[in-house]
Structure formats: C-alpha cells, structure tokens
Amino acid sequence: MEAEVIKNFTDKNRNRAYQVGHIYQHSELKRINELEEKGFIKKKPTAKKAISKNTKLNSKMIEKSSDE
Image 1 (cartoon, rainbow, N blue to C red):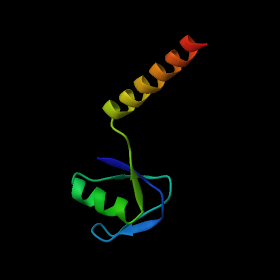
Image 2 (image 1 turned 120 degrees about the vertical axis):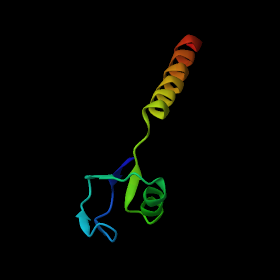
Image 3 (image 1 turned 180 degrees about the vertical axis):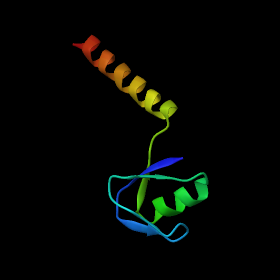
Image 4 (image 1 turned 90 degrees about the vertical axis):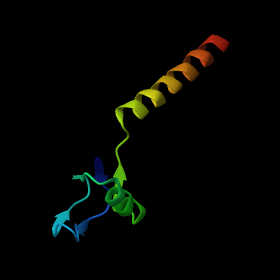
C-alpha cells in the first residue's frame, strides 16, 4: 500500500527518513494506519474509491444542469 508523506519523519522500523511529498510504501496495513493516526502520512485513495467519487460528482453535476 502507498501513502503520501505529509510530515517529515524517520521510520523507526526501517531507520529511513521520509520527507513531505514523498511516497511511503509498506505491505502491512497496520503500519500504514499507525503512521496515518500519528499524522505522518495520508493514504492514497484506491482506484475503485477514486472512480466512485468521480461518478458521484459527475452525477450531481448532471442533475444540477438538468434542473436549470
């Protein structure tokens, strides 16, 4: 799983520094959630979620234009 670094930190498990804007990758969701809860990273939306959000947005735009 990938996440965007939103606050500089050094990963205690890997002894590696990560800077804002970089991508943090880890195979364990537990570790990703831990770092997100501490405010270091932000999960990237999965393709399925991104498509769903775009579909809802487009539907609302179509409804609004139909009302006018």
